[in-house]
Structures are given as structure tokens and as C-alpha cells.
Image (cartoon, rainbow, N blue to C red; front, side, top):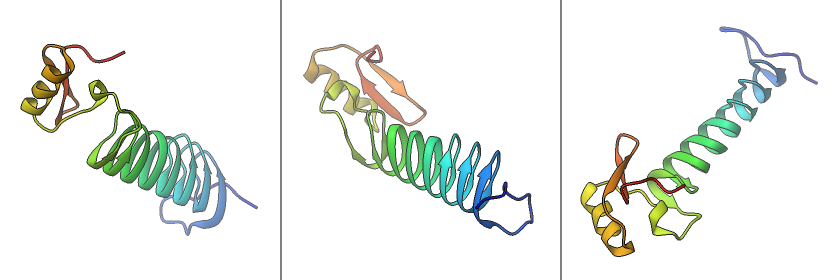
Length: 132
């Protein structure tokens, strides 16, 4: 089945399991390939704790389509998702982030809290304190 992955310049294997496997299907600590399952997977389809790729299912996913707790990309789903198209898993407006401070202030007024706070470098959230 799988040998451990290659090094820079080596040809990717079909299936690799290891610390930094490089293959079409990679399973390991820092897998890289088409389908990756691991702690920090990077590839077209990434499943893991911190996934980076086109399609991500992770705690922290970054890519084109990202599903997880804290996701960043074009299409995102999750309670703390930031993307062009956001598929929310919560209907609580207090957990939503907005691209402008004014929008967050309007939402804060609607839900009965005061102030706003930054979410990352780009977004704003209603209420002075982040929800716990």
C-alpha cells in the first residue's frame, strides 16, 4: 500500500502514509496531494484539523469550498465562516460577521447590544464582546 511520502522533486506516489506524505491519496501529519486526510492536509480535497485546498472539511479550513468551525474561502460553512458566500450553521445574528463596521453596528442595535468588535483583519461583529 503506502510508503512514506517523497521529498522535493520526487514523483508523487499513488497512496502514501507518513509524516509528510506526497501522493494522490495522502494520510498523515502534513499530507499533500489530491485527497488528503491528516493534521494539516493540503490538496484538492482536504480533511483534517487545519485544511488548505479547494474543498476543505476541517476545524480551520482555508480554500475555495470550506466547511468547518473557522473557515475562510469563497464558499464557507460554519459558525465562524468568512467568505464571499457564507452558508451559516447558526441563525443567531450575534455570531455573524459583516464586511463593514456600519453593518455590524446596525445589527448590534437590532439585537439589543452595544458596540462592535473586529473579526480578523476584514470583518466586524456586533456587540462589544465576542460571544462565548
